[in-house]
Length: 222
Image 1 (cartoon, rainbow, N blue to C red):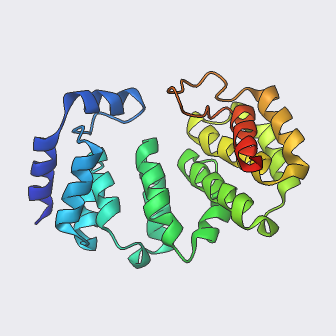
Image 2 (spheres, helix red, strand yellow; image 1 turned 120 degrees about the vertical axis):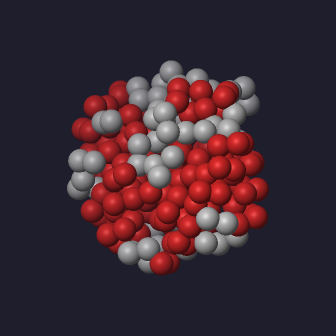
Image 3 (spheres, rainbow, N blue to C red; image 1 turned 30 degrees about the vertical axis):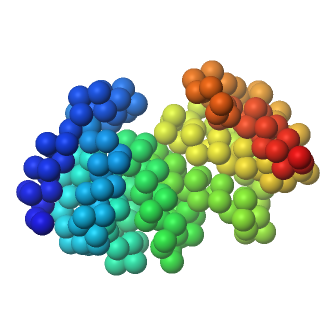
C-alpha cells in the first residue's frame, strides 16, 4: 500500500464529528477525523512500514501522523529526525502518541529530555516534561526533585498550555510518589491553580494536581 492509497482510505473513513473534535482541541484543518479504532485497524492491516510512515508523517495530516506513529520503526530514527518531528507537531494527541509509541522506545530519549528541558519550543518542552515525570516515578535518583519543584512553581503558571499539561503531570507524580515532597507539591498546585477547572467526566479523576495527588495516595494507602 502506498501513501496515496493510504490517504485515500483515511479520507474515506473521515468522520465530521471527530474532525470537529480534533479542531476544537487544537488541531489544524489538515485532518479527516478518522476514529481511533479505524486508525488502529488500518495500522494492523499495514503492519510495520517505516518508509510509508515517514511519507505519511510529511503530509502533516493529523490522521496520517497518528497512523504513521503506529507503523514506524522508532529504532531507525536518528536523534535529529526525532527532534525535527517533535518541533513539527501542532496537536497534543499526535504529541502524546509519539511520546508513548516512539520516544519511549529510543535509546537516546534522555538526550531528548535534557535538551527539551532547556528549550523554549513548546513541543520539545512538552516531551521533556513528560519524560521527566517518568523519571520522577521510576528513576528519581536521576533527577533533582527540589529543583524541579522550584521550576514548576516559577514557570508552570505562565507556560504554554501544551507544556502545562506535562508539567502538571510531573508535579502530580512528585506528590504521588514522594511523600517527603507531597506537601510542597500540593501547595504549588493550589497556588497556581493549573487545570483546576478542567472538565472531568463522571468517574474520572481530575487532572488538577491536588485532587489527582490526594486520590492516588488514597488508593495506594488502601
